[in-house]
Amino acid sequence: MPIPILKLHNYLLVSIQTEIDDKTAIKFQENLLDKIYKTGASGVVIDLTSVEIIDSFIAKVLGDVVAMSDLMGAKVVLTGIQPAVAMTLIDLGIHMQNIPTALDLEQGLIKLHQELGE
Amino acid sequence: MNSKFEGIVLENSEKIVEMWLEEIGTLRKENRTESISIDLYESTNREFVDVIFTSIKSHGSTNAVEEFSEKIINLGWPLSYITDGLQVFRRVTIDFILRQSERVDTEYISNVLSSVDEWVEPIIRILVNDYSGNWEHIVSLQRVALQELSAPLIPVIDGITIMPLVGTVDTDRAKLIMESLLQGVITHNSEVVLIDITGVPVVDTMVAHHLIQAAEAVRLIGAKCILVGIRPEIAQTIVNLGINLTDFPTKSTLKKGFLTALEITNRKVVNVKSSENDIEKLIESIQGE
Image (tube, rainbow over all chains, first blue to last red; front, side, top):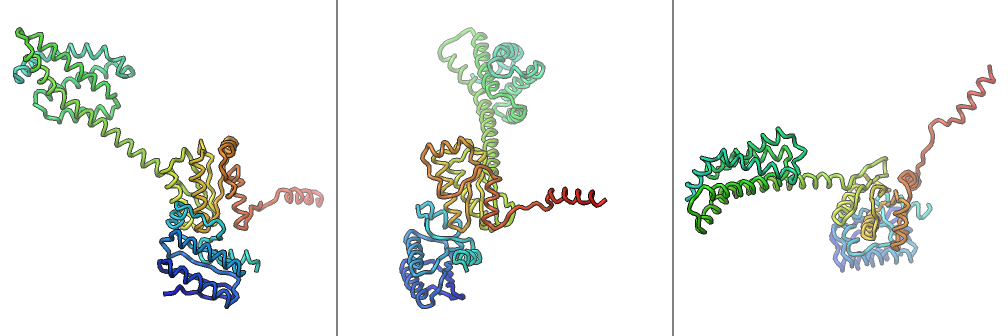
């Protein structure tokens, strides 16, 4: 099942509800970039509240998505990363240095709003 | 054989007790019981020796010993007093029995030794077990108390949470700190977390590493982490050790950190009433009169 990507004004909202395997992740990357191209969105919020496991590959894909979207002129914010997930990522040495994060969807939208200066 | 020795000992219990009291008196300096008053010391000695004789009479019934051990642990008598006392009792008793008997050969001596050991050993075992059990209990209680204190989290105002750390940080504690920090950020919905290390005596590479990891994790879940309470000597060690803390903001005091946190959350502290206005009003009212 592909991950749904919703449009809200000129933002895109993505809520990942299932455990993502490598294939879905790649598929999601392609879909999101397509959607950004089609809608001309200026900001993307990826909500990870229901995600309990993020391995190094998914982390890399997420990092790539952020960089790619940036190239296409859309800012990405990751929201709702769970404490356990954050600890595992840090333990694995994945710091996701350049990825903006926010506590929840609301904060994420506020952050996008601020960063885009709208 | 055993009952024969028992008979000798019980018949002459008065003499043995006297010898024992004399011996134990000389040991008083060594087993840290000098601070105890002489009356109490003597009455406890009496009770101790009574307990030993009751135990011998009742052939290993442990009730009296257990009662005595509970009492003496509660009073805080040193364990060395107990072990010394029993050691002395063994020596005195063996001495006494050997002196009472006319015919002494190797077999006889070994019989005496083993039967006296049979009396003394269960008592030692119970007392030492009780003592160490008591100590372990205390240690475990203190460990729980320490753990409760190790990672407190204070939500001061909406969006700002403070974690004051006191005492050394080791790997176990660092893990606890990280867990409680992240959980706290989620439950209190905090935008900024201040970690106050004023009370951490030493910040070495390990501690710094744990702090950096905690700060990174906090950033991942979408909040900001500010390290406050960096004392001059801590700043020196951090730089001398070549630890890179540039990735997350640091402040010297909690006060400054809190103001920065307010700035980040778009707030500031204002005086409700400015004193300058008050003075101006006062002057105006005087001029009006």
